Image 1 (cartoon, rainbow, N blue to C red):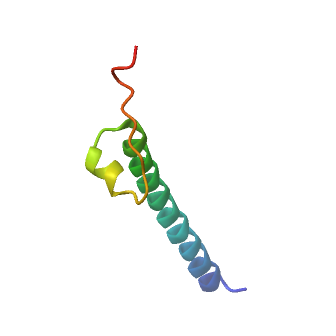
Image 2: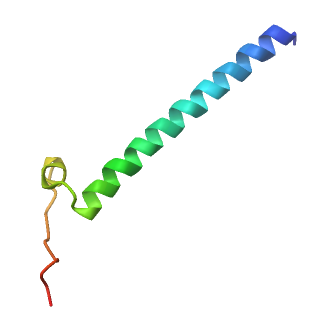
Length: 58
């Protein structure tokens, strides 16, 4: 395997890892916001989601 082929494989792996990190960070942000209840519109946008407001429960 010549050096230029290895370089292309390494570049492709680096790009795919970078894309995976971006996707996982976006999912973590979206689900974190939905779980914390920061935005009611985000929670209501999830199909079939039920919103339970437990902030004023004794």
